[in-house]
Image (cartoon, rainbow, N blue to C red; front, side, top):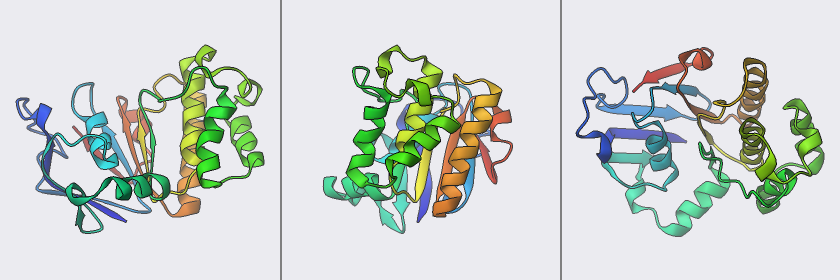
Length: 214
């Protein structure tokens, strides 16, 4: 899959000074399956909006966005549903977890839709991220950093050509960030998938093949 932005900029940024932006000021930007992209900027510069537009949940932009040559403005609800089930996975900045469900049930909701991983793999990923002992606890009582790790595992429990990761390490220490990124990278490489990861911290993006600042 190739995602192409043609002179695309979110409408809320039109009144801001975007000079010097490595993404908003370009005529054309390509994201290709199999490559890893890092996007760094301070808050309010459009990181979350960009991923939300690619994921199809925001439409307030100027310019055009194409997936494999098709304008996403022409996609119908059913097409978006299939894309989000099979082609695009997202780790939301706000996580979008169900507080009253256990961490495991939050993950199972996604995995049961796609049957992508056996349950043993879920426990294996949880062990890697240090949350295996918290899987049966209600998600709402976990720390935000623990919830981020739940959201990461959930996003990996489906097929995808691109993983969109929105500040998914913001409440983790350096050790847990390194482990979580290693898991994400491993899963993306196993599938030949692309990764678009946003961050407030440029140092988190050091391993990215291509980087943009907003």
